[in-house]
Image (tube, rainbow, N blue to C red; front, side):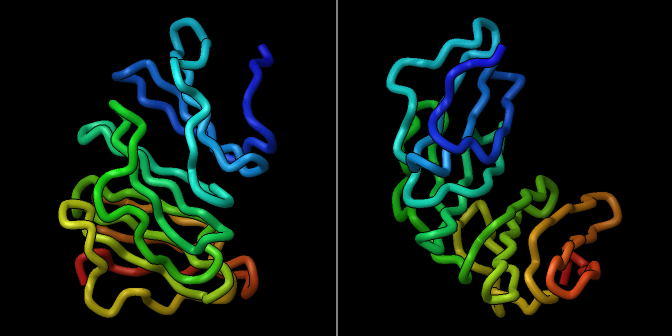
Length: 170
């Protein structure tokens, strides 16, 4: 340690089942992928990620990597077996997507849009936005957490210095 990455690494997610570490490199618009057993980059790494990869979520059951791109205002979805984008990717978000979280129970992906003060919600099985999405959040939503047991989405709003709580079933 340390291990080489791309420029300005900003986010990381791990798939312990596949021994993979994914690093979003904001400065050169790539994703570095490491074999965690050897801490070496896999063949072909780094991979293109779109402009301004800011945050990631990983579905280890379906082998999908979700990446929001801050400067493109979109969501890109990659098959982690090939590191190729799935069909129809990229998908729209609000302005300034900065965070995302996956709810394994409801199969929903929540994206905090920092500039448009909203949260975009996708059904991950169909990759369609929920009716009414994006939803209003507080000022400058910047962090998300989901509680699949209590069925709550928590939104940290950095511009209004508060938290918002939503029921994930409605």
